[in-house]
Image 1 (cartoon, rainbow, N blue to C red):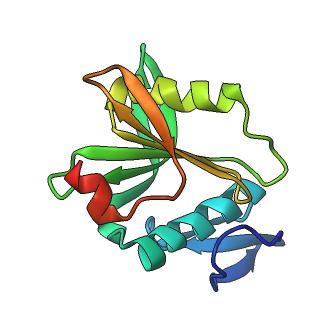
Image 2 (image 1 turned 45 degrees about the vertical axis):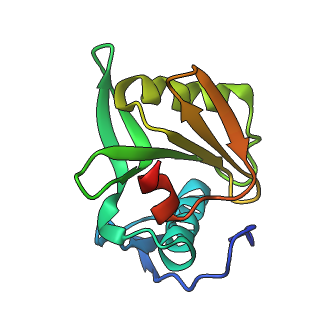
Length: 152
């Protein structure tokens, strides 16, 4: 798999039915190792090991209903009271991060109303903070620590 713009992480990889699978520490099972999953697993490990995010406060493949349609957020970070704080959308490294990707994650946020959105293809990471009172948002240069997002 491609080297990403994230700290190196040793992931548990195995082969099932001739195809690579990676162990997802959050879902506690092996899942198909696609390029997008490679980004997700590396990013989740980065959040836990480098940014202080408790594993028990991150959910992968979180189902939501939006306008009567089932959608799935790639990852959602929760506060200690199980309130959603952040949505993360992953793309494979060969996928450009475009306005459509931001529109996708913004639609998910209609339902969850989090203050933080992250989009990553493993090579580029975009993080923005939403201010609902002023109706604005701003991109931040670095991915915040867990303590920073829960204090907002």
